[in-house]
Length: 174
Image (cartoon, rainbow, N blue to C red; front, side, top):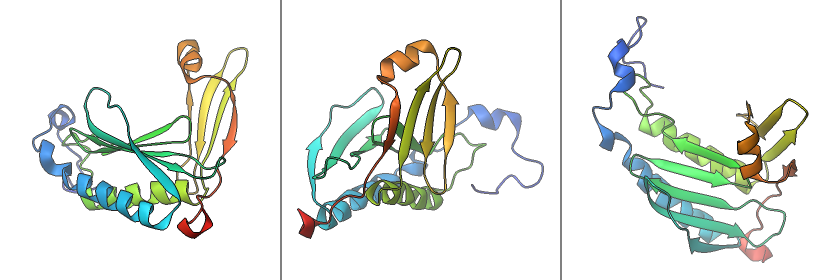
């Protein structure tokens, strides 16, 4: 995060304002270089994916190992989104409003860390359902999160279970 607001924090209206939507356009280049690097180093197939609203282009990297997680690299109108495994999705930037003040350079590093966790088998996902609770937990070495789900969200995500993804094979291993 940047620190342009100082100790007083941002003004209230900064939370609903985006004055420079092109600020994160450089992340598209970071994502493209990441895809090129991963294709050169790992045994993966690459396919174009259908895009959702707000997305410009999406590419799926599918490792040639059944226990390894796919990585989908998405160019959005505003930045980059990564999807991995069965349920994980993270956006760079997370918000992009003026108040959040996320730095493109920092986000590029975070994007690379996310991809490295997927590639090196450092990603686990768990979808659970009890009588009253339904949760999705995502575990990575430097970033873990759990969120509650509605019954409808749980139904959309599919069967419950835990997935501990394996490292991608190198090009020489395939």
